[in-house]
Length: 100
Image (cartoon, rainbow, N blue to C red; front, side, top):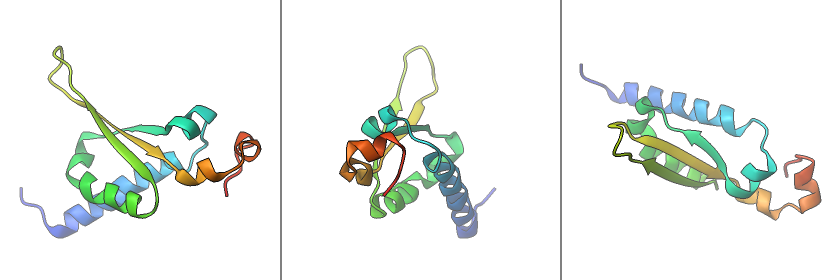
């Protein structure tokens, strides 16, 4: 099965939509301080390089972490998103979950 550029562009937009749904949800104080962790779905992997560069260009700090286990053949792949703007808010505003 061959893929066209359209397939990858469409897939990228689906990955971004899925990530945005998580990022637009509420953030706990722990997540504000340490980042929101999102598990990467296997089908996202081909698009991640481009998708992550878009988030970084928009000002997000994104770290990708891959866990490898000797007991399992599958890798666990995670993204940790930190919004630098949260850190610029006074703590009393962050505590009531108000965003700048």
